[in-house]
Length: 103
Image 1 (cartoon, rainbow, N blue to C red):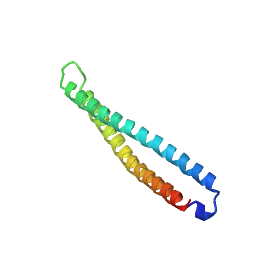
Image 2: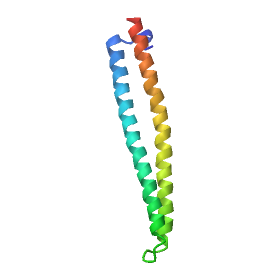
Image 3: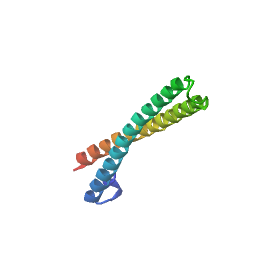
Image 4: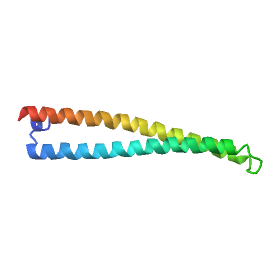
């Protein structure tokens, strides 16, 4: 792909490797953020159950709901990002294979 566009082969391999490393790093970050999303949801559920206590203010229920919603948003955004970067890594691997076949 890049070599066909008259880019120096060494530079093309460098670009592909750097893109792959960055994409893998972002993919690792999304995995961490997905775990954080689940933990956030669990904390929200715990807070909702604690809101039934007489000693805590009734606003605790609303905080629990807000925390659950925040966790759902974190999960959704990172799941979408993970899907995109998984496809990007697949494309990079396909590009590497194409470049190796051209050698």
